[in-house]
Length: 406
Image 1: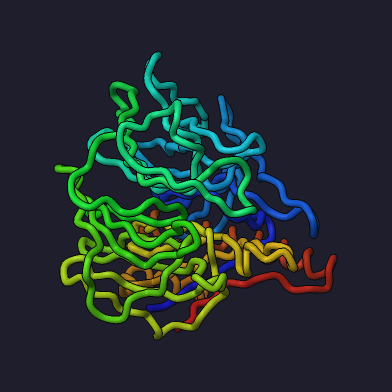
Image 2: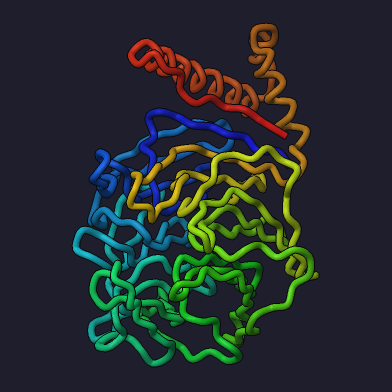
């Protein structure tokens, strides 16, 4: 496994954002960042950042329409050509609104449920996925369920002094039907996972695998499986091999028909993590990936799988996010985990570009798609080099580069 690392000065560092992969782009929205040592702010809600995972460059786009407010801890998923965004924490506190962004037109709209439909409690840090024209959400840190959709599930109040209001953890399964535009809170069979937030989930076929998260003072490392056809939970699964330590604010990304990639997070001792694991969902075996150069620790970052099967990790916090002694260190670093052999075509393209001084005169003789890839790569890298030179002249410091390490 290789890791390709990039950091570009123009992209605002952030934590608590969302992302989805659409076509060849990683689409990034929201989150928050530092203003100064004492203050943090939500990032502009009209901005969307697109990272071309094929060539490797960023673009900022302005969105239109009825956009959500600046938000952290929201949940996002892709359905058709829309990015759906639910809940999160804003300047007004937790919200329970649902928006969608048309990724073709970059226009936002608020998705209103039918009149009279009970709504979920406002929350953040829940997980989501799609299945059969429905959006599914599980858990999160929320307001009390009284007065909201609460047919099933438990709520546990956070009694610590640090909490604002009577918020707490829940283990509700919420479903939004995109055809009827109605919310439901179905009853599940089996042993439902305990209430939690800042957990992670990945869907393979009609099965969802859920790992970790925080409940009360514990950051857990339990693994659960949900059958979406019968809505049956397995209870904690028994796995073999070394088990990842408990954590929250991690990512859990499907990489094949039977494998899920776990990366980073925040452990029980308030340490940010940079470890990587593979879960085999057939054998229920964990494998720790030690054969790569460790990068900065990341928590409350995002991850998505590209069209080429790579996992792209972006942003997050690199230090103790709860420490009162130091400001949160947000990052704009991109890590691309190459979990499978690179195709011969991509290896050839990168080699041709690497020796562009010798090969560029022959690019016009290549098939149009390949020539276009090389020209785009050259143009984007020239722009980045110009910006890097300007930044070095202005500050006397070099900016992050792109590299591949074993």
